[in-house]
Image (tube, rainbow, N blue to C red):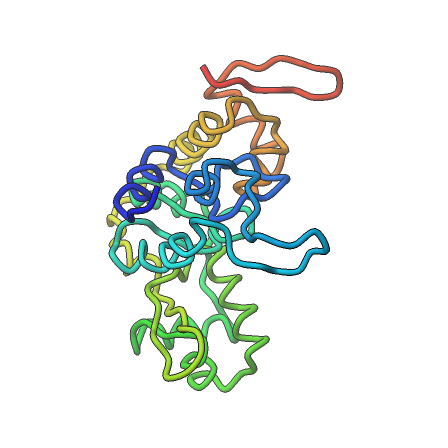
Amino acid sequence: MRTLEAAAAWIDEVGLALLFPKADVVLPSLWGRVAGDPAAPVAVRKPDGTFVRWADGMGFLWNAKDDLPARGLVCVGKHVARVTACVAPRVVPALVAQSERGEPDGLEGELVSAVRSLGTMNGGELRDAVGASKREVDRWIAALHRRLVLTSSHLVEQETGWGALAHDLLDRKWKLPKRLPAVDEARRELARLVLTAAGELTAADLSGVLGWRRRLAAEVLDEVAPSRDEGEFRIWAAP
């Protein structure tokens, strides 16, 4: 996989994917698809661990994580499992519908107000706008991604060094419909997506992806798939 179109098509197929694999998260990863093996190392190193070069495919992936949202192909951000994830645009309404976003206040509210009134902004611009430290702003940007309030927009080139990621309101970036799916319907859709990707799940697995309480995860899984008991674990299997 070496084109944005191919990456977007695959993410649309699976619905949800991580950028890089995470050991305790059952979702597939874009890196695994690009490298052909989820366990493939991201870098080539000498026997003593010294870095030699990035693995084949890392150049594409590193640019793709910014280019996919910039071109409106994939929603990218720390939206599930507390790490950078790729969300198919068709899944964004369901993800938002089942979330408990609330109205941000304090520094969170100031950051949201700045983006709402001034447009997409990178971390440095947000620090200037609210007068807070890099550590504080980075922390609250990540929290607003998890709450599905902000999302990645595009990369802003800098005069020196790496580019800076610009953030936008998720609702504005992805033009959410006025009428979102019902909460129960959205939860079932997401549970089916994760279950299909994993093949089988425990309630803890689903909770780890979506941040639900395990009891809720079990209730939703009961609505979409059969289960079996294996010792202390209850496992739901994809149809």
